[in-house]
Image 1 (cartoon, rainbow, N blue to C red):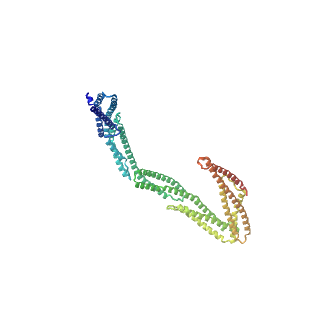
Image 2 (cartoon, rainbow, N blue to C red):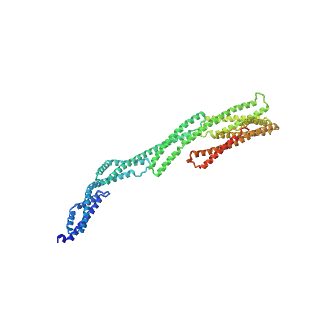
Image 3 (cartoon, helix red, strand yellow):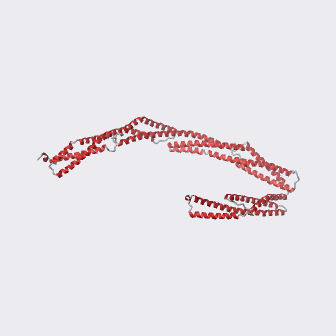
Length: 602
């Protein structure tokens, strides 16, 4: 019996044990390879342990004696064994040895990778403190800040400039380490994470510098905005004071030519003041919008309130415009409504004085009845002028009189004096007229009133009668119809006033002892007036109906036109549109009938 046969069991145990140990070494070696190649960033100290662990297992694995011993021992040990036993052992050993052979290239590649990884981890160890420093500077450059004054902004600028200065001093060192990392990552054996780390470092450096400079620029803008805010706010206060003075200086000028010139000049001045105030206010508001970004909530509210107050004061522009509109209206009324009528009153006074003198001292003999009539007419004219004067005085007191200091000019006093003189002369004439009328008997006075009313009525009824005979005018449009209706309403008012005139004459006639003739004249006048009045009322009724129909037709036409021109924008249904069209046709027919029915003659 041979040695191997006698010690088969022992040798088989040794064979199996060494085979299992070889498998264990391969397992640990594969685990070590996985740790080396793990997608994880080690410190250089950590990777040193991983590398040493891998190297130890790789060294054990690369010892080929175990492999050779297993192959030789298997041949000897299984020499006399049956084919089945040999086949099983061959398969087991082939699996182990095949795994061994496959693992060796991985070990070789991992050894090569270890060198690049070792350099990479040494680099990341070197990079880490620089990154920590850079992150710290980024935090300083981007931290939340507040500034409630130019002084606080200056302090923030100093701090930001220190951060940028530190970045500038570190620039060369950081660029060198980035360049070193770039060179390492260009090695084909370089691990992927190194490229990410280099890019992260480069991006963080660029971002930190950009953010720091952006913050510095915005702080400088903030400081500039504070300076503009303070300067422009003071400038605005001066501009507003100019506006206030201009508002107070706008006054009524009672010299017409000078007033118009003054108004034109002040219009230009107002435009200049508005432009300056609005321009400076915009600068203040823009500056406030910039400084608001860094203000605390309390200061935001305070500055916004300041700007709101300035905006409210800037309303002086609108106040100036409104006052200039008032002055423009004043100039127009003074020129056309007051001075012109004042001159007319003065001219009438001269004529009235002359008429009174002719009545008192006639140049030719005059009938008693004519004398009474002329006296009564003069009295009525005087009272009419007094009424005009009263209206002018009311206009003066309510709209034209001085309303602020400095308006009581020489021209103003002259106008007041002229109007006072007019009233004095009118009052004197009125007193003389009443005194002269008192000399006549009551019948004579009443006769004069009757005659005077007849004289006023006669020309009016002649003109009105001719208008009635000519017939009602026809309108070709809504605008013309509206104008005709206004004319008819005015004619109606005149008609009613004229009826009062003849009624007053009739009342005066009934105060006379004998008034038969006057009654006949009054009756004839009333009959003529009734014809005119009836025609006027009838025409107004017809014209009102026509205008109403025209307006309804125009409104319906607008609806139809809008619906047809933009169907998608209209909510009108088809059946409603058809109804409107039918209504429009019917209104057109009715309108034509109305126009045809207008009586062309009385």
